[in-house]
Length: 435
Image (cartoon, rainbow, N blue to C red; front, side, top):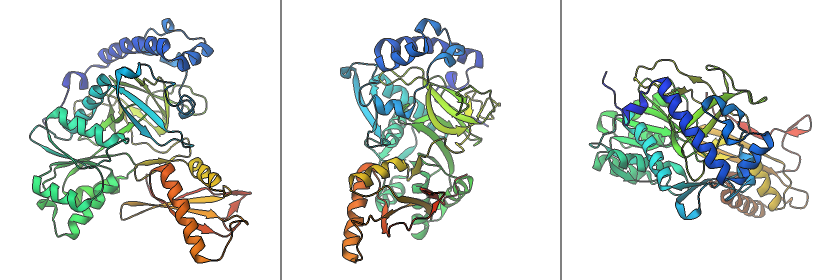
């Protein structure tokens, strides 16, 4: 079977050569961070580690971890490792208490990120003869700009559609002959259903492949998308904190995602002890940015639970594989591709004069996430006047949209009506079958 590579020399590099490359990059990166990021220098000093103690990848475990809490504490510029005048872009994700994660990029950072996305598109069969329809959101969200840049690097005709406006998506897809679709899996499924309703059969649709990420999805969902659109559906993984989509990507074998480990070094740790676990162990995924200039995170705890494997892959790539994340060590939910923390809901409720007595209910209907928030009225706010309740629900929904970036359906319920177990309300009911 012929294989598609974007940077074959890197993607098929021997383990020994890769380790040497990673070690060289890590030594430089630790020095760069220590000299330019006082926040991380303090963490290293507290642990008694100096840059000269890091002689290669085998010494990585000596470095301290970074967490989401560190990113919040250092917001906005505390982890910036380059002067602002050297930065050309930011991207952002919602933060746990309203403080967002803001990631900075130099032009070199953007170039390397686009190379990573180009590897993913090439692996899915993309060439300069293809038409790549990017239906991830553009703007602060990393999805649109990342795959857009990767598509340009390959030379595809790029359709910068952004998300939504499904009628226009379908018109451009069919009129311009889009061959590769990049979006969230739930939106791909929705486009597929819409095409079906309009009488299109899989053989009528020009698409051959799709690159879908930013939210959890099951193998059943993959099969459904592949059948409806008549394509091969590839997974992609990334974090705004590290760069965006393209940290890891799926190949034709579809047994996990190859990590672009010349740029991102992956570890699996015990989430409780922080101990590095051997290959094949299930634990928390940790990433180190080996050559990001503006916002280089060393040993960043993703909170994603997964497994790494170096088992030989039929695609010929030697890059380590990460399994599809199997859950999280924190309470974050991914709803319609957006990170949502219960603490964000609490912040809104307290700001709006409510008690933090609420319940989040998430489900997936026709491959689309539903997002409801039930909120107990306080004695002061209690009313049985329907128009007042509707107005309060609308006001709360708007405040939550500002905080989260997506619209919940808010329902006000009577005081003490949310069931409690041992005095605690069950905060999250996730009815989606994501594994």
